[in-house]
Each structure stands twice: as structure tokens, then as C-alpha cells.
Image (tube, rainbow, N blue to C red; front, top):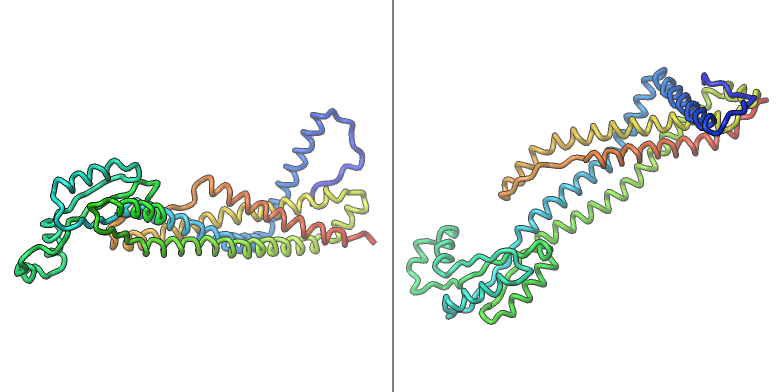
Length: 321
């Protein structure tokens, strides 16, 4: 520790004391950075451990965020199929379409008449020649209803389906969203997994930094004893160690951000190929600048916390003999 405690305090004005307060903190912060620079191998290994530990819950959070984005995009594309009673005239069906279009819960309405339904079925089913021998068209007319954004969720779409089935022209309706509910259940499971893993890795980060600071204190035991002999305060002695923990956290958080960006870049191509099979496209999102700031702030706080707990425990055990 290069800083020497001042045994005699000069009588400075209030603003001067504030300036000296910040100057002392800057000196300790720069001095702790110098200590890390003098031990680059061990410092980098500790920072790498912190970066990997912080990147795991952050990567899961990125995965959850992208899964929610995919779910929202599929929610907006959900449709309700209304099958019309046989014998209803085109005029009656058009009247039904006009009424449904006026619903505030409905975003778009498309109509598929019986001939169009049969033609599409022949094209997709592969039974085109066999269907040509039918005496009459067995398929009903279908009205495709796209819910508005507010009613695009499974619960909202189910509520809208019940309302639409009350229309007299509608035989029954169909809403195929079981796969979407399963996907949302997986997303909720991932969210809980993120919280559980984050709690465990936060504890691991605190323990790693605490142990690193403990070793640093033991290596400077003689220096600390001398500083206590000449009257250095506890806050003066512990301040460089606290800044060391903060630096560990800041650099570890930045390393975690780099790891996450590399992971997103690596997985983006595979995700695009998967979504292409479902006729969708989406670019994988990484951490925003706000989320990066939150990650670095959390990492620096964990670094400070681990250092504080270690310093408070081990500095008190060191007394000059």
C-alpha cells in the first residue's frame, strides 16, 4: 500500500474536505488497479472466473428474452377458425363477416368459401383425383379471425372464441394454441431457472472475491500491522481492498458481456435456420446498453460485497504484536 495515513488533520473548509475525500478515494482506486497490474496472471484468472460465472445467468436471461419475443410474434399470428353451418347463404355469411369485423377484439377477418376450401384441401392432401368422384362438396365455409394484440394471448383468444361461437351462423370454432401454451410454460420454467442459477452464481462470485481478498490481506499482514501501529484507521486500511473487489467485479462484468455477445453471434445462424422451417424470421437479441450497465453495476456491487465481508472478518483478526 503506497498511501500513508495522515496523523494530523489540517483544518480545511468544508469544500476542501470534500475535495480531499474524493482525491483520497481516487488514489486508493488507482492504487488498487496498480496492485492488480502487478499480479496479472492471478488477477486475470480471477476475473475470468467471475466473467464466466456472471455470463451463465445473463445468457439464460438473453435466451428468455428471445423466447418471449418469438412467443409474442407467434401470438400476433394466431387465428380462430369459425366453421359455418351448412345451408347458409353467401349473403348471410357476409353479414356475419361484417358483424365480426366490427368487434373491438378482432384485428382481421378472412373468408374461405366452400369451393376454395375444397380446392385447398385437394392441393394439400394429395387426394385430388379421389375427391373428384364426390357427388357434393363436404367441406363447410370457414371464416378466419385474427384477434387484436390485446386478445392474442391464449386466454384472450379463448375468450374471443367463446363469444364468436354464440353467433347463429357459426357451427363451431377451433383455436389451436396448445403448442403455444406449452411454449409459454417452457418460458416460465426458464425464468425460474434463471433466478435459481443466478442466486447460486451470485453466491459463488461473492465467495470467490472474498477468498481472493483474504489471500491479499494475508500477503500484506506485516504491512497492515505497521499501519495499525502508526495509527491508520480501519477505513483507510480496508479502502484499497474494497476497490480491488470493485475492479474485479467491473472487469468480470465486461468479460461476461463479451462472452454473451460471442454466444449470441454463434447461435444466431442456428436460430435463423430453425425459424425458417416455421416460415418465420427473427434476429437474436443480445444485451442492450442498459442491460450491460445493470450487469456491470451488479458485478461491481458483488465485488464490493465480497471484499467487504472478507475485509471486516480478517482485518480485525490482525493486530500488531
